[in-house]
Image (cartoon, rainbow, N blue to C red; front, side, top):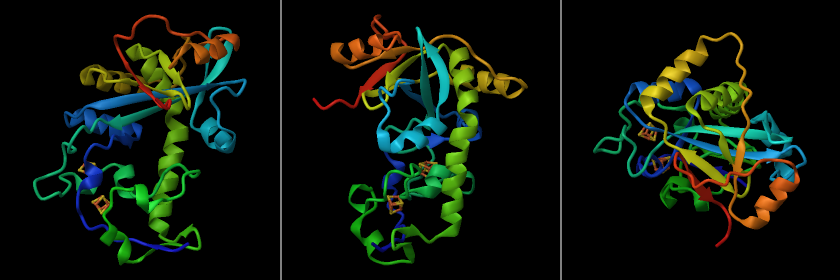
Length: 249
Ligand code: SF4
Ligand code: SF4
């Protein structure tokens, strides 16, 4: 299938989208006075929580940690916390930091997950943006080399930075994850502490954290599966995080 695309500058993708950030971008977001949301999910070494067709992608962007008697693979996203319009969107729907906007802002509406094909129907871009403009995809292949390179950079940062992000979480006391596919745990760290910890970890030559992770799950049935695998389940009412359930109601 072929797709043409031309951004019409409607600004919709700059509203209510938590934009995933690289570590440097997250540090920049903090320096600018913005809020970062930390989203955490994990699967177990026995495969619980790991969808079969995304195995390699999920493994590459995760780090092995302990939970109780077993190993888990935790994936951590630092994202710009955008509820309503992004703090950088001006009255004319223009980006105030256009020249240094995050990678993911440059990639939209393309996906950064290679297992998710572009589906214009679920994107914010209005119909006219898909009706004219240069070719974006020909025969299922992305034709824009610059965009291809940006997507590669974003995926590479995901892989290169996961260990550092895990160490940052340890220093911030972020130790409860959701089970992949069941939901996410979401944290809104104090941004002064967040910036301090990023700077602290950046100066360390060896990054290592060893404390255990707990799982927050959506119900008793999943809790039993997680515990049967030897992992630890959180039992306290969450105070420092929220749980975003992906389970059908
Ligand atoms: S940083 Fe700029 S491009 Fe990215 S969401 Fe905010 S306003 Fe939009
Ligand atoms: S939603 Fe699409 S068309 Fe509108 S500004 Fe974002 S990328 Fe451009």
